[in-house]
Image (cartoon, rainbow, N blue to C red):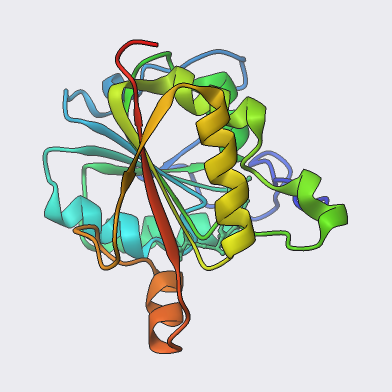
Length: 214
Ligand SMILES: C[S@@+](CC[C@H](N)C(=O)[O-])C[C@H]1O[C@@H](n2cnc3c(N)ncnc32)[C@H](O)[C@@H]1O
């Protein structure tokens, strides 16, 4: 796997058999009807870069009517989330092994998603690495495209410079209103959030709501 790149399920040896929880994106390009995967009409919620899944597992337990997807590029973490979901028999959560930017750009239907959570995206703090950041103008455009009107995108990070960079991109896109959201919020904590809290490190959170009319 290239730095900042993604494994593909086909290339990774010793992959687990695909089961209820690990869902592979189709080989064909094109949007997927995510609701039909669950056969349910609950709100569609995405956790982009889900890590080992603390946030999304808790969210799934507390919101049994919602349909949740954890998107994660590292196969070891995909397996970890899936095995927790399997142990808890969580039927409202699936894990997708994919780069989340590609998932939004290729596989989500327009105006279909209720909530997007981006928790502690890799900050790539050095200026020469900024191009590797996931949050960039075309990706903010993709977020605007896939969210329903009034759908939300939440960002949480410990990196103030990446936070300001992201705020600027969301603002410039013209698609969103920003709602201040103090910490702690009503959402379950992610593993990184817990770690930073324990170490007394300040984190920054924003919630952008997709405008109903431009
Ligand atoms: C810093 S960790 C945060 C994990 C989790 N969100 C949390 O708050 O505990 C970032 C995670 O995002 C994943 N990741 C980074 N870039 C990604 C991408 N483009 N697509 C999918 N996952 C990505 C990494 O593999 C890692 O698990």
